[in-house]
Length: 163
Image (spheres, rainbow, N blue to C red):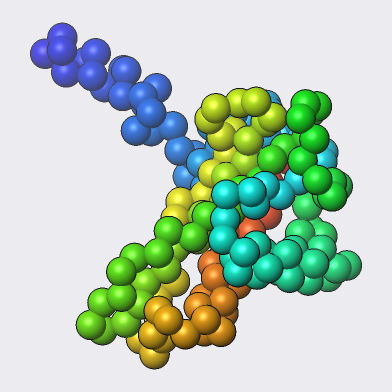
């Protein structure tokens, strides 16, 4: 009985319960996340095609009525080495084409310069198409853009709930 009582008392503090119900992503460090005022986008490890999709998306989403304009963050043109800004990374973990379609996932991570682990991340948002061949470059770009839209919406939602 004592063990059950300890389990009940300790479980809410465990990482299994760390995700707040009002958040759609994972806020690992709320204080650091709230302190973000400027950001840059790190694309150094992505293929050129994905970098172009990200640049077009960020350009459109940064316009006055765009998704990124809903954040009070100022975008830096490049990622400087130090400072108090955030580094935003987008990822597109692709799954192998299946017989009934093509799966792609989009994820967004926010880091502080020099930090090995993110202060915020979205879960991998699946985007599925039943009509796309993975070799179709234009349609793959459409899926990547949809994935970017999904993860940025989660970021904006979580930022608002943290404030």
